[in-house]
Length: 307
Image (cartoon, rainbow, N blue to C red; front, side, top):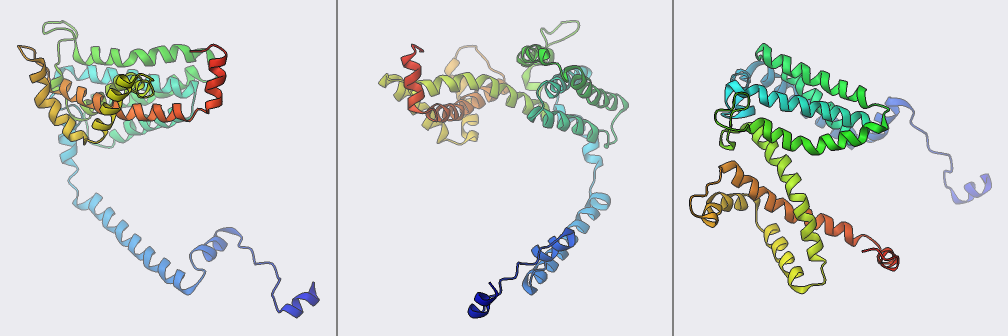
């Protein structure tokens, strides 16, 4: 070995290993003069940005605007005397998320921790005592649900049933039943706003559009030319149009399609637009999953008599 190295003139000594944080810094940030200069300049820029951010957060930002308008940001013009219905829905959802965390973990654990963290951050703002109590109750219910379902596989089926019923319960609780109902008076969708309306449209849009997307995906793979052509035309047309255009058309054209004295609330029109838009993308996701199944498995299933 030594003779061969002497003949070739190569240095066959093993590279010097870098140990610990200082070794990592030397190898990745200060390995050469260029890397050292780049690290120093980038560090100075980061420190300058952090100093500016701290100055803005503690000296120049007007946080009282958020505190004073927090209810409008969250609920819009939802009746102020019915705010408890929104919090009741949030508390039920927090409890279900905690149950899901305990039953399955994984992504639900991240969602549960996010819900608890959001409720904790809400207490940072100068809000009224009742809102603080609701936020603390949400944190407690997340962990209560986790402890109830942790290590109990038999809880999974009830949690699934409650999760499927939650959107219906939430809509009934938030919307109410009638103008003169003693407990849950009617709160039309037009008075919903802020974060409440955003989450409602997102949740209902996903739940309602998924079955429609599955049907479109199956129709696109159908052996019937008419069905396949109609599904392809719908999917490609909707996916080729921006969402804002779909929402604009749903606001202006849906009342014309229904005609007569039929009226739709603005939020309902927006929900229809979101559902129609999301269904086209769900259809492509499902179709991609179906196409990923090897043809051999499909033929084997048909040979076994499966539909």
